[in-house]
Image (cartoon, helix red, strand yellow):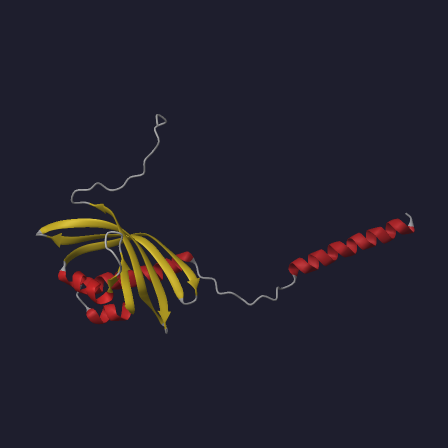
Length: 176
């Protein structure tokens, strides 16, 4: 074996050892707190449940803890936002039945802001008859000290069981 080949083999071995060492060295990045989606969904499902229980029980103190002072509701069929006091007055005036949250997803935008989206199924007495509605809801939550408060709600009616059929996925038949 020539000296040139020995030097080349040593150089190649040294490079591969350096690459291996770089891959296994700890990084200098600050450690990040990993929050799983299921934990976030559990936390915000509990907050949303507390919210609807407060509405059903007409519990102003519980709502005050869950809703920010500037809370407002945005809906496509209402021009402009509905202020917290107006929304609460309307909610407390209704005779609520059951509610159910499903298809919840939560995303942290930063340590102080989260966006929760879900389908809210609710039943209410309307003109003496039960009415069930499904809404697609997006809530903006902000950290206020050590607890979360909702600052904004965006809600859109998806289906009404008392007359309108639920929106279903259209499956192509191939004839379109």
